[in-house]
Length: 263
Image (cartoon, rainbow, N blue to C red; front, side, top):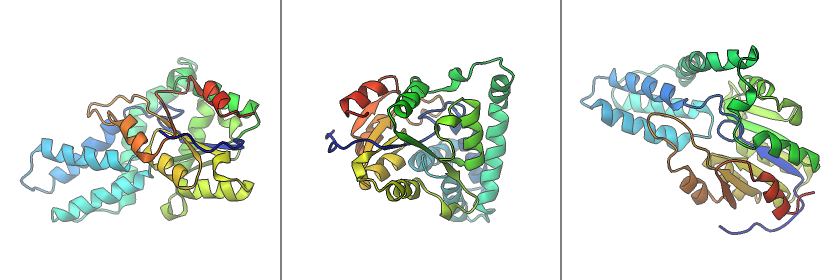
């Protein structure tokens, strides 16, 4: 890994799921079976194992982008099998409903005070956010998850105030949002030189976009639980995407800021 050119870090962009939040940990166990069932219904001569291998491959490949892109790919696979797919947004809503049901007990337990929000935070994430804010860095949040859910999760986990109105997520008109758009907006709004922005995420999308726009890229290869063993190669994927720095969590975030001479 090469060191980035040094410049005062003025802004930071965070991904949400797998970078700060573990509320949706295990989401693959909802998405993959849904897609596999739909492809199996096409009646093509394929084993369940073959279908699941195909699905896990493209779901993993598209992780970090808006969920709708995984559904667009699902529609393409249904068409290849002679089926007539619904609109991608309809499949996204089916998936969102499944995931919402799967994590509803987690959300309810936090809201009722039965479980502490910290149980669903990536280790060191809240302290790292507070450290950045304390050093005068302006923090942004951008996620492929729907924007209203991103705002809800940020509030539930106790870090919404550190982002204020600088929270962005997937929109119904999906062409109007991407992490790349948010990065370019931050650079433009603040008149940044690329390395005055640090991008922190566990997906190749934000790391690649950060590198291509000249930002410092910090890849977080958190462990995610799912029965398909997806993201087992997350560290290698982040390295290939161009991460300047890699860590399994955010516990050492303050040390990285010291290394970069932030604040």
